[in-house]
Image 1 (cartoon, rainbow, N blue to C red):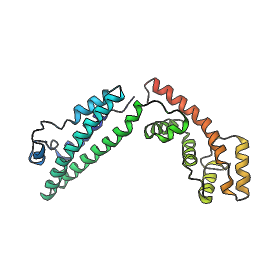
Image 2 (spheres, helix red, strand yellow):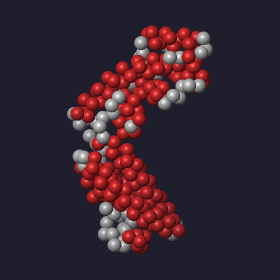
Image 3 (cartoon, rainbow, N blue to C red):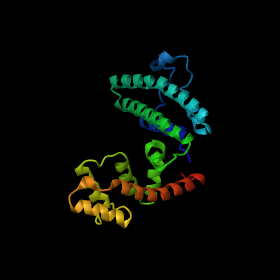
Image 4 (cartoon, helix red, strand yellow):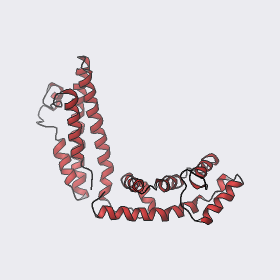
Length: 234
């Protein structure tokens, strides 16, 4: 199930009100005088529509509306926080800053979340290149206690094991028979890795073969992720 961004914003408002005992700054107040014609922030309506969107066109439309509303409201929060700080009300000032942080986080997450409307990644690498799908894959692997597959696959895919020290560390962490995060790979692949390690030829470790074996493991994890998505359990 997709995350409710409207709920995230409501929680941010609740935290503000509990911390300050007051409502959030009004766009029509002296802090929002630049937007005196605005009767409300427009944040809730934009997020409500975004949460309900079922097509990429609608999602993009409502995401833009939210980004605009957030961009208009943040100066109001900044001004209110600055005034409160000058008045010595650090609680209110910090609460305003927290609201700005919450809005910025929601805005960033909405941008990433738009990817859920796109087609499924065409291959395993695609799940690592998409922030949205990578996050879901990590979540599924964590449930299955198999995050080591993702960690090592990501290192190999991003070519971060080209240097000897990085390759040695990855071998000791994930491939060695006594590795704390030992991955499940074919015995022939592990043997080839050990031969290179025993000779101290860390750059000669066949990481592409390891990547292939990890891909088989991840294909199963991705399959279970899809099953849970189909049942609405993600």
